[in-house]
Image 1 (cartoon, rainbow, N blue to C red):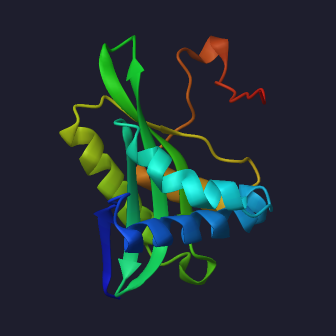
Image 2: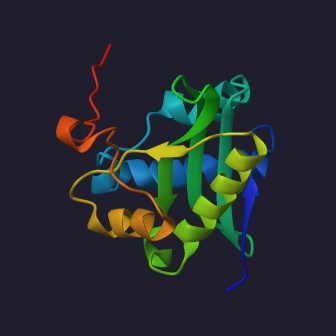
Amino acid sequence: MDLHVRRVDYSNPTDAAALVHLLDLYAQDPMGGATPLSDDTRERLCADLALRPHAASFIAWQGDEPIGLANCFEGYSTFKAQPLLNIHDMAVHPAHRGRGVGQALLAAVQQHALERGCCKLTLEVLTGNAQAQASYARFGFVGYQLVASAGHAVFLQKQI
């Protein structure tokens, strides 16, 4: 497989179209909410990401076909006084799952994080997404906990 991963140039029309296509595919998947991206989101997304200096996206390509996407945002660990990198979106085209695409994307994200001096990678995954959980575990991700007696972290949201 001619697989290569590269960072997205949000101003490049080919990269932008690939990012929107893959993110929309993910959004339509049950693990992404089963709702397509709005026209407004599709139109504004890459220009908005380009304005965020701590955003980084990576696309896995098989030849000229975009087959995987990771959208990341740098945060900060106050306990380590170092940046961290959160993988906000991780998507692999359904026809290419189970072929190492996710692992290649994670490796590119990790390399970027190391270059930025990050102390860790973070992400959230749905409890029903066993395939993604297995992929993340293979890469070395573990559940977040500080001390066993306090339990595991839970990801919450509030729409505003």
